[in-house]
Each structure stands twice: as C-alpha cells, then as structure tokens.
Amino acid sequence: MPQPTFTSPSTGTIPILLGSIPTAFPTIPVDEQRDYLDRVREFKTEVEVKGNSLAYLKDITAVAGNATNIDVPRTKAQLVDACNWRIAQCLRYSTPTRIAEAAPYIQNVIAHFKLAHLTDGKTDDVPEMYLGVALHKTPGQEDKAVEHFRIAYTSSPHIEMQFHSQLWSRACYSRLLRRMGKIAEAKEQEDMIADWVHGHPYAMPPDEFSALVSDPEHEGEDHILEHPQVKQTFDGMVQMGPGMVVQWF
Image 1 (cartoon, rainbow, N blue to C red):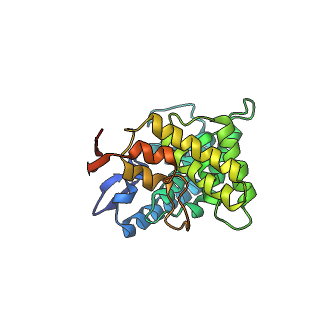
Image 2 (tube, rainbow, N blue to C red):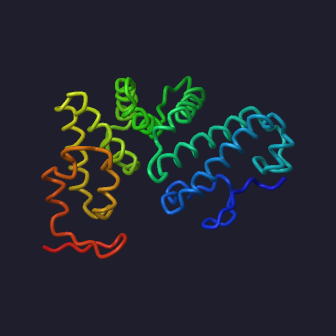
C-alpha cells in the first residue's frame, strides 16, 4: 500500500498530510476543499481501525520498512492526532471559514497533547487559540471560549512567532469580549494588535491584515481596523499587487 494521497484538478496528486495544504486551502475550489476534508476523515478512520498493525503502519510509510522496536500505539495516536489537526486547520482556512465545525477535532488535539505532557504541564498554545475561536460565536459557549483564549495567552502572552494565529484569535477574542460587555478587556486586545502592527508595518499587506482580523459577519464598528494606531500605520500605504506595498511619506 503506497503512502496515502489526495488527487484533485487543482492540487494534482499529493500526500494526504502535505504540510503546505492548510495555508493554500483558500486557493483551492470549494468542492475540492470538501473532497480533501472527506479524504482526511476517511484516512483518519482507516488509521483508527487498522493502526494497531505494524504491517499497516509500514505499508503507509508511517514508519520505515526496516524499523524495529516501534511503539505502535503511540505511532497510531500521533497519526490520528495529525489528522485531527489537519482537519481543524483546513476548516479554519475553508471558504468561507468553517472553524466552528472544528471544535471536536481541536479538543482531541488538546487532549492528545495533555496526555503527552502530564508531568510538565505545558500548553499547546495554537490549538487553544483555535478552540477559543471555534467556540466564540456558539451560543452558551462564550465562557468556555474565554477560558481557552486565556489559557493560550497565559502561556503565550506576546504576539511573536505565531503572529498569524495570535492576531486572528485575539481579534475574535476582542469581539467576543465586547459582546459580553467587557469593553476594557476588549480594548486591551485591540491595543495589543495595534501595537504589534505599528511595530511591524511591513509584516503583511494591509488587505491581508484586514482579512486576518476582520469578521465578514460582524455588524457595527470594526474596532481594530478603526483603531487610530492601525489607521496611522497603514496611512499612505498603496498596495501595488499581492504582497507588494509602497509607503508614501
């Protein structure tokens, strides 16, 4: 059995868990997005059923053919976890986003990480951010969403290496806090985003930033894009094309 693959007109034939797929997902036609997600779910189910067999794991090249002393249950669990995380990522990047559907997959990812870190108490920051976003517009889940956002930002308090996920999730968090009437806390998130943009004005073009921190379903003022520091940062910038910005002084 060869390494599992996915085939579509726009992607060609690719390994099922190819690392570049999630961020490329918006460029893939919607029907192919759904086909890919179905294929990953199918592969996940297959691993859950057959993954206790070392022969199967070797067949799908999850382990080397000449490998010995393999921890089969651990390898199976890692493969299932990879599928859960891939599904969650692709639901986020679907057109339009389907992040709310990702909650059970993200919960499984977090549970897998916690099981692997029972003694050190580490936090898997990005999945916690994802789960906060997945829950933040679900009626009755607001407090749970806040809990996951706070877990993520307690562990990762600054917008640094994971800045795309940080900006995206903090923007969602700020809108949730405003809906909950926690205006001062919402402003803290908005100020943090604005400070980051001011310090990294060329990290991404204005339209990419806008898409990252905005919600097409949001009604009313966009407190991030209308933030004075954000407007000042992007004032005078002219976008010449994808990823191309000119700053007029």
